Length: 518
Image (cartoon, rainbow, N blue to C red; front, top):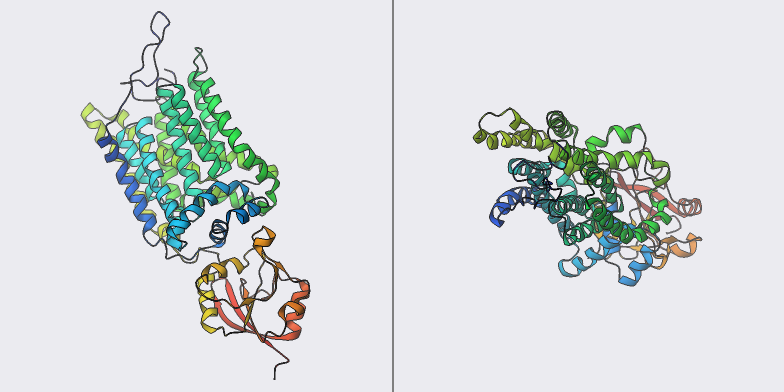
C-alpha cells in the first residue's frame, strides 16, 4: 500500500484510485458538519485560551516584548526607518500590532492578547489536522495536548510573533492535506496563502516546506500525478513573497549573532520547546511509541509529522555557521507535529482492538497523554507565568521604585550590555514623568534603531544635574557601570558619589549624588 493510500482511513479514501482502464476515479470526499467540527475544535481552543489568558497581564514584559511595544507604537514613517535597519523579518507582525494598539491600547494584556488568540486557533487547527490524518479521537487528543503544553501558555502570553508562526505552520499543513484530497487550483492557492502567512510572521517557519515536499514526493512520485507540480507552484509563490524579507533580514543578521548552537543549546532544546523536561519526556515517549506501532501501516502521516518535527531543527543546526537560526523560539512551530505524534498513540492501539465498536474508546486513550501532560506540566505552567521571565531583569519593579523616589530635576542613566533598561523604563513609565535621560544626544527614533546615541562629552549633557539614578541590569558581583563607555564612567565616578539604592531580580538601582554640591 502506498503512502498516498494510507494518508487517511480506508473508508473513505482521500486519494483517488485508478480504475482498470487507467482513468482516475472520483475520490471519496470526507466531510464533517459544522457542529461536529465545533465539538472537536472548541475544547482545545478554549483550554489554550484559558491557560493563556489567566494571568496574561501579570508577568512583567521582557526585552523582546519591550522591543515589540516600541516598534509597534512608532508612527509609520519612524517604523519604516527602524525596519530599514533592524527586525525587517518581523515587519508584518509589527504592522498588525500597530493597528491592534490603535484600537485596544498598549497594556501588557492587550499586547499579548493576539498571541493568546493565535494559540487558541493553533490548538483548534491541530485538532482538525489530527482528525484528517488519523481520526476524531486522535484530533481531539492532539489539540488538547497542544493546548496543555507549558510552551503554549508561555508564548500565548508573549507579545512576539511565535504563536502566529506555530498557527500558520499548522494551518499550511492542514491546507496541504485539503489540497491533496481535492487537488483543485483553488485549494492550492489557499495552501500557498497559508505558507505565505507562515513565512511573513517568521521566515524560519518556511523550513516546514521540505517536510511537505518530502511527503508529497513519497506519496505521488509515480503515476504522473499533478499534485507535486501544483505544490511547487504554491511553494514558489510563497517563497517569492517572503524572499524580500529574507534578503533584508540577511543584511541585518548581526542582531542574531549572539545565538549559539553549542552542546548546551542542543541538549536543552526539548526542555525549551515543550516547557519542561517532564513534559518533553511524556510527549516524546508517546510520539516514539506511536511511530513504532504505526510505521508499518500508516507510514505516510508518520513521515509527514516526523519530517515537520525534525527537519527544521536539523536544518537550522547544520546551517548555523551561515544563518545563525538555531534558537528554540524559532523552532516552536514544530511542536504541533510532536503533539500529533503523541496523540497518535491512541490511534495506534486501534490495531490491537477487537470489535470495531471498541476502536473509538481505544483511540481516545490518547487522552491519557493529555492527562499526563497536565499533571507533569504544573511546574512548567508556573514557570511560564513567573514574573519576570527567568533570567530577565525585573524592570517593572525597578521603574516603580525610581518613580516613587525621584524628585524634580533628577536625571537617569542606563548601564548594561545586552539588557539596557532604557526601552523598558520608557514602557513602564509611559503614563508618568520619568527623570530626564541626561546622556541621550540622539533618540532611538532619530537613529532608526532600538538604541539611543549617547553624548560623546557627558559633562555637557549632564550639566548641573544634582542627582542621577543609575539603572544597572547587573548582579551583585559585577561592576554597576558595566557596558557604559569609558569616558562616561570616568566622568560619573569623578563628579558623583555612587551609592546603591535598591536591588531587584537581575537589576540594581544606584544613586549618583553630585560631589560639588554644598
